[in-house]
Structures are given as structure tokens and as C-alpha cells.
Length: 162
Image (cartoon, rainbow, N blue to C red; front, top):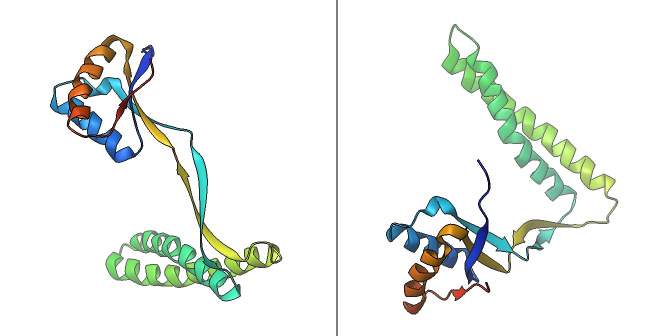
């Protein structure tokens, strides 16, 4: 399958607006398999959510280790052919506890290795500044026509520079 040349037909400030435009194209019978939404000018945003200390490092580590430990324990417990349900639940509980302890120790170790350089917790995300709706060149004029009606209905999009 060869890649078709594509052309931007509209730009939106939010993903929801771009999604609405593609939904509008779909409602009009447009071949949406020839459409893509592309985030442009992506930036990394790191939101600080709080201070980090030894206790919080241990708690975050325990939380991140508990679920994998429980899942691994549950899977091992299912291999007991005599009483798999009871065995699976019991081993899952042991796995949860073991995973929390190991995760807690690992969290403390990582925090200690940073030596106070990063005494805060944060969440990272990628945020595009705009979203382009692009379509295959062969059907771009039809998409522009259909989206023109959506823009006049107050969707907030603007035509792409072609």
C-alpha cells in the first residue's frame, strides 16, 4: 500500500474541535479512512503536583509495585489445579504485599540516589498548540467544502493554508 499525498484542510486549537470536524465529515458520508488529525508544535509540560520526601517516595513506590505483584501472584495461583480460585486469590494477596514492599524499597532507593536534586513529584504530558485535519489530496476539495458548512455553524476551525 502506497502512501497518498495529504493536504491540511482545517486547523483547530483543541483536539475536541478537530474530532468534531472529523465526525462531521463522517456524518456527511465522507471516506474518513482518508483523514488524519495531526498535533502540531508539540511541547512538553511538566506539572508539579507536590513535594517529595522519603515517606512519599516509599508510598509512590509501594503503589506502583502492588498491582504488578498482585497480577503475577494471581497468575501463579491459577496454576494450582486442586483449588485454583482460593489459591489464586491467596497468592495474589501475597504478591500484592510483596510487590508493595519491593516497590517501596525501590522508590526509596531511587529517591536517595537523586541526592536532593529533585524534591518534588510531577506529571509530564505532551501538548500540541494546534491540531491539523489532513486528508488525501484526491478528496481534499470535498473535505474543504463539507467543513465550510461546519465552520459557519460555529465550530471555531479555520481553513488550513494551502
